[in-house]
Length: 116
Ligand code: FES
Image (cartoon, rainbow, N blue to C red; front, side, top):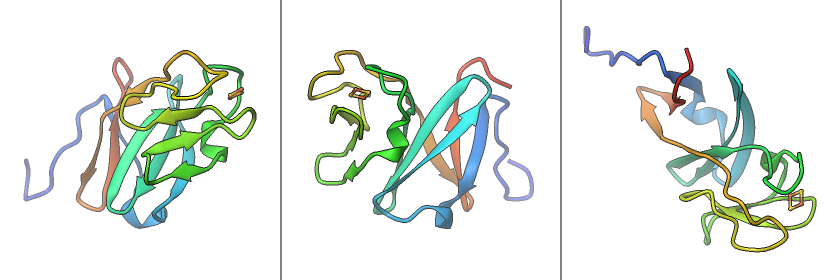
């Protein structure tokens, strides 16, 4: 902490401002080698891998299901938990990564291991 502003560690990355995303919206970000889908549901933010585990499709281009806290791949319809990264429907069978995300001041900050 310095002057009331919280410092962000080197493996933490500010993706955007809180107001840049509306509730129910998903947006893709690239941090180093990580492709991240950032999702906002009400005042909560979630960050999971943006690349579908079935084929190389951007999950952030799919629909957000706020009630189930899932993101749907538009290509074949697998839905991924925003909490665990696990798919709940076929054809995808493997989880996508989940990244810790928090709001720092007015920014949305994600933690990516091993990145700088
Ligand atoms: S590419 Fe995502 S479910 Fe097939």
